[in-house]
Amino acid sequence: MLSDKNGQVSGANEFIAGALAGATEAVLIVTPFEVIKTRLQGQDVVKGQTPKYRGTVQTAVTVMKHEGPLALWKGLAPTIGRQGLNQACSFWSNNFIKKHVWKLQDGDSLPAWKSGLTGMIGAIPGPCINCPMDVVKTRLMAQEAAAGAGGKYKGMVDAMVVIAKEEGFSALYKGLVPRLARLCPSYGIQWLVMDQVTEYFSKN
Image (tube, rainbow, N blue to C red; front, top):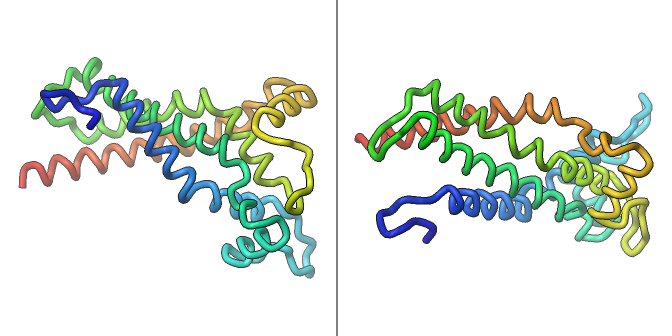
């Protein structure tokens, strides 16, 4: 659907495909599990006391019981933005580097190290662009409020404004370095494995 009559996919269409993939995973998988992870990691527990959140299923049930079922999708908008941009930039960068840096032609294959390096480089733009969305996502997900009750942050835009006003604009880029440290090798491995497996099955 996104390829031309010759079966080629343009950089723009690679970007669109990545964005759609990222948005889909954000809605179906990433957001609810990010809410659960954020609550489990963010709670302060005194030794000897029973924590409020005690596991994946129990946390999900507790959040839905006290905050409503949709609370598992708190921070959905910035999560869609984050995941969409991550995947879009990765798909586009991978396509661009292969065509214009490695000069890859149809039927050519890349050495494993080039596939890995391409994936690592392609992972850089997304987090640099969407870091504010990641910060906002985490703040919204960590915000505990009963269904119908207001919290400190009213939504994605309001959270960005409040954070920038109270903590400074640079606060919207908190956590960028550890995100890059995680995503670069992660995407490097992802593209390395995908390219090598694709090549293997195309020859066998």
